[in-house]
Amino acid sequence: MIAAGVFGAAGATAFTRTVSNTAETASSQVATTLTAPVGVVTPPDFSQITERYGPAVVNISVSGMTKIANPSDDGDDPFAQFFRQDPRQQRQVPVKGQGSGFIVNADGIILTNAHVVRDAKEVVVKLTDRREFVAKVLGSDPTTDVAVLKIDANHLPVVALGNVADLRVGAWVLAIGSPYGLENTVTAGVVSAKGRSLPNDGSVPFIQTDVAVNPGNSGGPLFNARGEVVGINSQIYSQTGGYQGVSFAIPIDVATKIKDQIVATGKAQHARLGVTIQDVNQALADSFKLDSPSGALVSSVEKGSPADKAGLKVGDVIRSINGKPVIVSGDLPAVVSLAMPGDKVMLGVHRDGGTQQLTAQLGDASKVPTKTASANGDATKGGKLGLALRELDPREQQELGSTGGLLVAQVGGAAEQAGVEPGDVLLSLNGTPVTTVEQVRALVTKAGKNVALLVQRGPNKIFLPVRIG
Image 1: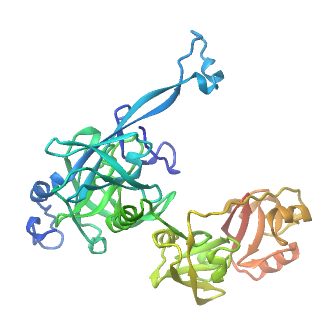
Image 2: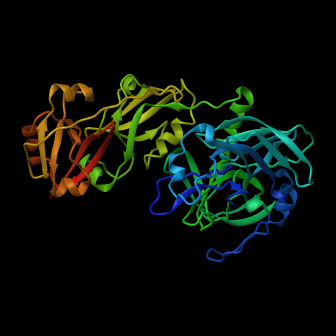
């Protein structure tokens, strides 16, 4: 099975889950402690770690079926394939894939990536002693990309688990896996960053490394220099599909929490707050009078959600959760998603120049309502923002579910450079809801050099910082 994910990168560059496809391609006694002056880099000897814990790393082969269109019967007609939409003219073909995993329980519990076993009809685990077992998938969690397997064996070698909190940026780390099917391949590097939030993967605070990770390494362990597993290798950032020096691993504390839920209940649960958030850049920080460009800016609050019940409002900037600072917006979902439905969280919120503490009881992420909205119209007049605005008619207000807001009919100047588009609905300026053009002009006059516009575009709401000075 081909299991590669593309996550909004420029050009051909993509965050790619590193499962390979035949069609596509702790302890201190094992550590080597080196003392050297600062500035002198001496790599550790990973041979003892590999010898002791390598047997706990497994190769995973998956097989399944997929549907493809039948070959064209129309000879030289290059367009025939586009007219064959009848499912009865499709055929199933076998597909195979490979990944890695590691044993965490001597009775056969194995951790790997969810994308490695996705859609698999059969999963085969091969040990380093050449024994093979058909594995049962106990559960799989696409949100964190963690899956748990069980094989019918006992007295198996197991890895030791480490503490991600003790892992330091710049520390040596080691990966063992099966890149391109080459079993028990060892590669090493350093931790490049921690708590990395990736596009469409905001619920996992990834460990970034420069360890060589390639297709087939997915699901394999990432060891620290003491021989303890600190992560599961999951994704790479690549323009070619192969290793380019940027790899990402799921922290082992995240994986262990998901594993415990799956073993106990067969599935994992995730909590939700019910807000849309975005990063705070310097322009937005200036607009909201923040002391630094940090936090998660709330651009929408779902009605009736835990956030709504807690009193969160559009324009709030969440600066902490449970006492832990929120530096970038991804810090918030990384905590919320790994909490349990019903858990309470304390939110430190910046609002109107002051700080408030709010308590939210989290909901269930599996129960997410959907809604749509639209807005259309034409123009009247704007101001020095470069906007031509008009009031919404009753039908448009009903579609948006709001009695306020102004339709952006034309845009230019500073607003256009900031990304405002015709058809957007201007909802607020610097956190103040707007309903008339005169109100916008008055707010702009006293706003200074920067304003934050909250606009709605289709079903989405986003703050756009505009420099007007």
